[in-house]
Length: 107
Image (tube, rainbow, N blue to C red; front, side, top):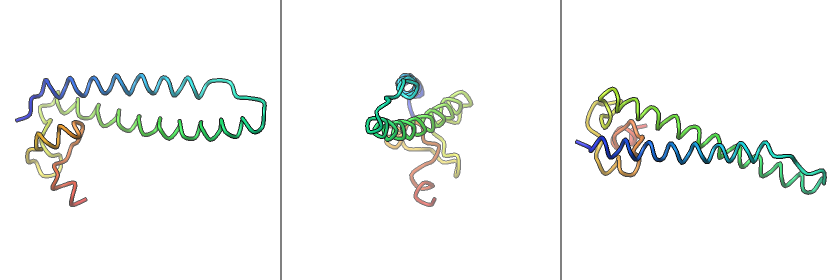
């Protein structure tokens, strides 16, 4: 049985970290752009990269919120597909995972 308080703390810490990072990305994307064409092209490439990072961060936030909901529901650490326990080792690596290693391998 995983230590639920430990994983809750880890998930909330990562959520705070991602929230801060996404605010920084939004601020960067909202910053005024250069009037120089060459600099503008580089800035647009940077914006595309920041948008990709933002989408990735938002997806992780969604997974973390779902894991926190499973903690509240009492289903954290139980595979959403097969109903077996998720190993503590797997939760250490991916604390937001809803699936055990066997069900992930099947997907």
